[in-house]
Length: 235
Image (cartoon, rainbow, N blue to C red; front, side, top):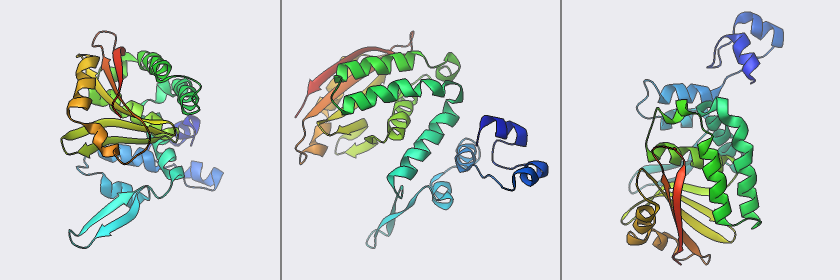
């Protein structure tokens, strides 16, 4: 649904006025906006909302632990959800998403180095409006934004994957290698890279034949973009 249509209806959560419905002979239900509203207000656990809305489906069941595994039904839904979430989170900035997307696809085709990709991420972060970064001055914000953007491009990417000694911020898997990314805010890139090495995050990919790199990036508190990074091959 376009911004114009949403303004015409007067509701951002998918409830249209009667005249709007009569003219278009349709009712639009904006699931992503509804979910975003739920997550940011009264909902304490948004997974039931994602399941009921159809964004998540049952992937597995363990009868011993009686636990279900939920996941996106297919890549199209996964990418669509990421793109929608990205647009609602950064609606006024979404135009520059294409710049980062182009850099990612160049990286995937090995047309640019990972260092050049980081420079694209640096410029992308630098262009995010102050009104967005001022609300959440922490590494989780920057992690969430890059994860949502990469997922929207169809990247094979994981966030907060658990290991025996902690959680990886982001694991980006490309045909030619795996990049474990650790983000810090107001610290140093060395601290971020050392954490990946010290906690041996790469062990998660021990059976994978691809090389693995540890990528530490620090977000400067003043400029609010990447002010240093370090890349070390760990496998």
